[in-house]
Length: 254
Image: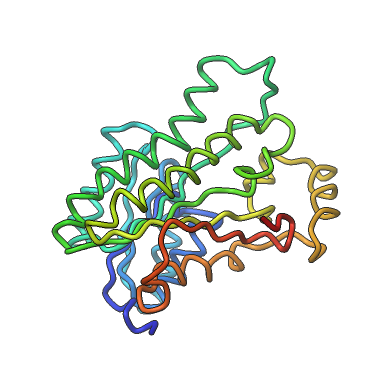
């Protein structure tokens, strides 16, 4: 089944670190041709690409701010050009951009959070459609979050709401695009030990989160990878669309 990854052309946004980087490395090891997207972390993106090449895979690096519509289109087009087409898009770029209480949210913060977490998903997906059409179909996997269901922690209301949008858009896109041979699903990580929480969560917040996880610990980026591999493998998940796979150690059991 996993042989189908050999030569599969994949763009992963936000692939320079965390879950995106772990997925990129695994797909490259399976034989995919991977476009590693980044915005600011050039050295980390190049390191991911080098790891893929060292494992015998193929990788290119694409820079761009996908929170801007024109940049999103350029990133997709550039990736498809370098890969010779596109078979799978993983919309992984996103961030909380700081914990901000409702009383302190201003227009600038609102726009930044929504542009990065919502606009990027819509516009990158839209830009991928012509490339999927030329390929005879395609596959889209979004990264949403446990916050889409539980509302997130203090100061994370906008981020949680943006991820709720992503989850809902996943279901709508699955219906809209099924006639074009495009499957659309999502992965919803729980509390994962990445630099996301280094930036946005205190030790006390993470300790409190652990008490809500039946497995008693935070997850790792590598433990999220299997869900993406499953959803990206047509021979395994060809009849799966509009679904959201929760990867959270039992923290949420919907």
